[in-house]
Image 1 (tube, rainbow, N blue to C red):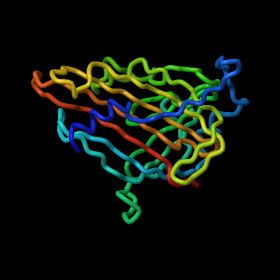
Image 2 (spheres, helix red, strand yellow):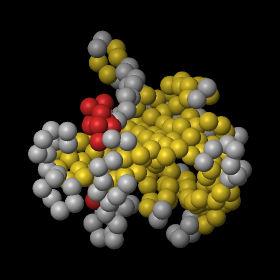
Image 3 (cartoon, rainbow, N blue to C red):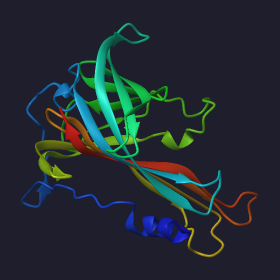
Length: 254
């Protein structure tokens, strides 16, 4: 895939998101869903299973001029109730992966979900995210990455600093891949661009950070899009792009 693909990402903002606007006399109102457990939108019953189409964006080299998108299917299954390192009741989620439906499933990853009563914590690759938070109200925000050490961690995680997760489009019906959901919520995580379009000559630096997740009542996560990349200009030691991206969209559940 050529560099023009990345330029088009910049111009399009990676994806298009429709915002539900509720107005009375041209003023936006605060909308709160009737109180329900957060596990309504993040079910954790043993055996609950969701299959996704996964698009993974990677760069050929550490700082490359080209990106490629690899396609997979992944299956997340709530496997068992466990205790986390703080002694709290938690749930282990196992992920299997395959190239397509003609291939066998292969174990890929393990996640931990912790329902605290007023939040859902989620541990992925040893990073703890605060996925959902009460109250579920239009424009309510919280620091979703506040548990992540973005400064002293050996990994380069500084780009995750200060992300404000925000509820949007509450109780909205949605169809994805032929599946219909009566009540969904959207969590806007980040939409940030720094620097100058790399397509502009002599651009020295650019950075893109974007994240959004959608959840359906009684199902859980039905859509996720994330991308992070940095561009270093041609006058640096290693010109080009580094970063990664992922897109998940539900194709089945039970």
